[in-house]
Length: 58
Image (cartoon, rainbow, N blue to C red; front, side, top):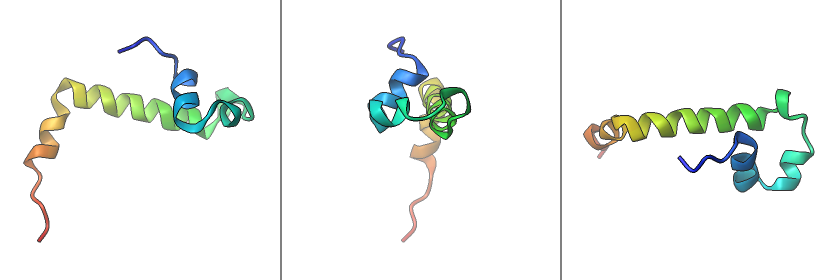
């Protein structure tokens, strides 16, 4: 991982102005970013294989 904070990641995704406009500790953006990071770490840890095994709908 690059070492970016959750707030820095949120700024890159949603824009710094939007992140600054909200109280960070209670922000829905914070919760979303923490979920993104958790899911990304799971993918890095091998979870991406589940995507490859899924059947496609016809």
